[in-house]
Image 1 (cartoon, rainbow, N blue to C red):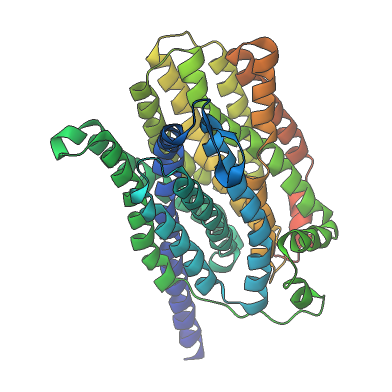
Image 2 (image 1 turned 45 degrees about the vertical axis):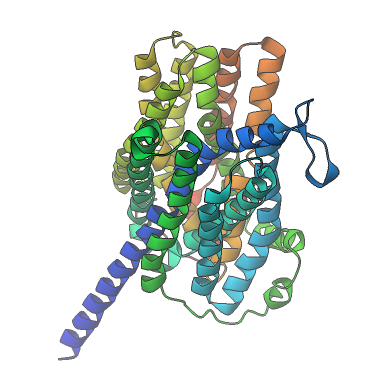
Length: 454
């Protein structure tokens, strides 16, 4: 009888865990539409056009009396959102760990971002300041929400399941991004048929991403549960009240007591910088160096989204056989080969650019998903949100070296081909740094059980 009871309890526990995992996947489904439709496709060109409409005769706008080129306003707004996220994420992460109440904080961040995105519908005429403010709020809120979302991973999945769970989350996100992007592109290209101007169609696309984000965020918020964490006597309660930069410094000091975790984060910072730069600069390479049109570039983005779903799931399966570390290292080799092939792409031939997009898509989702799951093994119990705030900063806030190298290489050589091949350095250095991290020992040092295959 006792054995039957234990089996029933174990089965109930597994069923509850699966239900929570399925809810967790849906946050990626909810928020990835913002990254794809808003940040990658529509907002940059549209906000730039709004700023240009408000510019003076010399092409400058003057937010808070500061002269800013209209063409730079979007980039500066993104940078400001990163600064806000740097200030807020460590503070929220430490508060979430101290209180154990991540879900209310996740809800606040998600609906702040969704509301700001939905309000982009009112971004018309010359309201560039409104656009900049909404972008800063939405982008910072998304970073905070993703930090909290990622920190659930070690709590909802045992070590042997994390690679698969993380990969499914990424796949859900890319699938949603592709689905909504198809709908948005239909609306945008056929806006006259819907009785909309081009500007109105863009604003509907922007607002729809916010509505999607808010609607589907209800699913994880219903299924995820808070877990109370035991009080720690290491000063964390006091540190959780510190301003953002000081709290981040406190988190890094704590990581220094676990140098192998810090070593992995350094490797991730380097190769992820390369990944983020390829994502942001591939369209520039396609338009300026290869002479491809906007429609071709949008189709390429859609292809990346679709293949990233398959890539995330495929690399998740490979990780079950070869381990997450080896699979990530293999993906970095694939990134290097893809960039090298990109250097030789002929101009004016979209089919080869689509082949490059396919290569990027197949390794994009998997390399990011497995990095997240591997890092989850290196986080000390009870400090998930705090450590994932540093991880999220590596993902979003520190990815500036790649664009700088890309820009400097183009400035010195006048060739986007040289600029794109320069990014190989990030994948090679990241490979070497990651290869040196003894992940089994790092997991043990963090106080976590070591999976059979990692």
